[in-house]
Length: 171
Length: 122
Image (cartoon, rainbow over all chains, first blue to last red; front, side):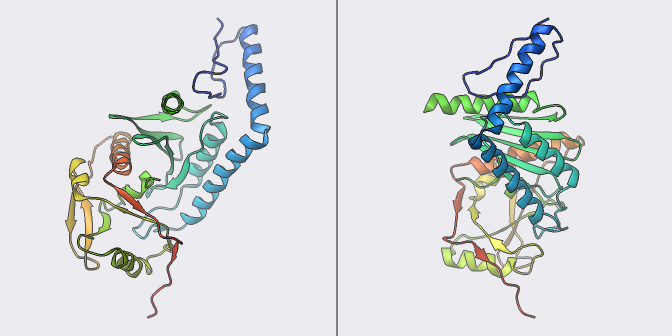
């Protein structure tokens, strides 16, 4: 079985490969896609954006490091949630916009993307890799829970690609 | 710019704290914020504030109740949905917070420079 990869879908996102295909051509294709992704990640511009997000995560961890950091009894950022969020940021599609980083009162890490009026995605990551999310696209709002394991959850990648595509089409 | 969604996440006591600002001039709002937050642990800086018309909470089936505790004009936003399934509960809260954050009626005010908070002297 061979799985087709979208090397450059209309939204311009290149995500880490998630194929389960095991044939030789599929493996070769997966290797090519990964090479492109790694090449993009080593480029100055892309790497800068990832590092900026990781720096922001680090700053947020410092700010949310004590019990009650928000003045209302919030839990400190969970160290495992921090690690999951770091992996999540490093796994984001190379050309995806970087999120704003925040901390939830329950110790989760919050990631927010804004694509313009009423086009936004928010994700909370906990210590097990549980990703609770909600997104808004015009008058539609969707929400769900997915798990971050070997890559960005499909539901979140889908939300990001839809919102990015809308932005490209509007511009 | 929009307020971050997690700015509206309910704390563990399920009462989101705010200030009733109707009738207060802008300068007075910042003063209330500074005077009430400077003694809170972990509060060093005010970067911005979000002004939320009460109807926006009602739209989300929340209630804003002015209780004047622990300070005058203190208001608690209550009525956050509680569900047995923790995942579903957090999803719903995030949906509400996103709706508040993205509402055009909710405005973000950013001071020209972040306001540093000095603790009150005893």
